[in-house]
Image 1 (cartoon, rainbow, N blue to C red):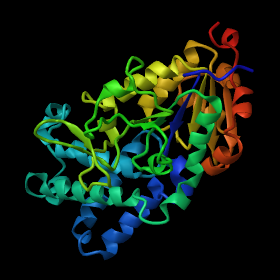
Image 2 (cartoon, rainbow, N blue to C red):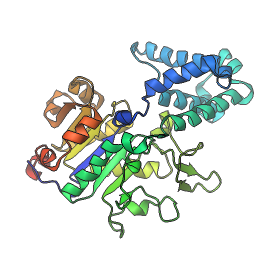
Image 3 (cartoon, one colour):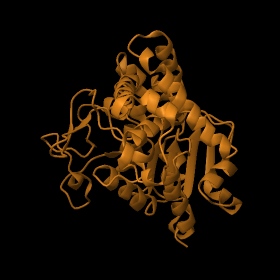
Length: 350
């Protein structure tokens, strides 16, 4: 058992962490979009384009022998944005010609793809916006704040979600640092250990947020008081390594603190992002730190290790808890229980 000190524990949260707040999963989003495409006049013009792109994604998986996969919302938007690049796509010189059916459905200058992408992006913001009963829906997120107060040390939460659950659960007098200054402008300095900011929780939103908007002319990122239709979100291949902040900065911070901490708590992450998996695998490989995985599925530790490019010898470093995010936060996220999972310094850095 080890003591919880500053930066000895970090959190990585995925879509499963927000399910108990009634935020739709990717699969639920796809189901609703397919219903809209069949019945809603605004969406129906993109029906055939959607079916073509979906079929192409599943076909590509089939070639690799993956027949159990299904399309998710991030992958759909990621593919559309790759297609929008057209001649700017790095692999374009290696393509003999665009598929005739794609050209037919994409419209002149691929305008239909651009329109469909914008419609989807707007809908995703709507999907993850807390429209009603906000405080009741996010109440279990308050346990992050309770835990931080109990250990009397700041914690860092890395989120793959676009929603505002952690922000909305915050009490008015609590210091949650999201990286924006008094003018709502992004500043990486606010996460610096040398700054005069002393927050309880530092929140890094790795894939963007529904209240972020980037000025297309200046590149400046601003934060707003409410969700924005043109929110700064990244999907698919866009998310691998963005050359602009805060995305590049946030990934670097995840790498840095994953190699500094003793315990990485992962809640509701599906381990389907190869770049994130690479960082997690590196963290376990570099020392005897532990990974606490919270998920509603049956224990799939061996598969997790495979996705992290680790063999079964690392199994002892993974602690698996089959719980919902709400169950874990309300019953398991306590100072005493977490200290029982944290190894001593001699066990970690050997």
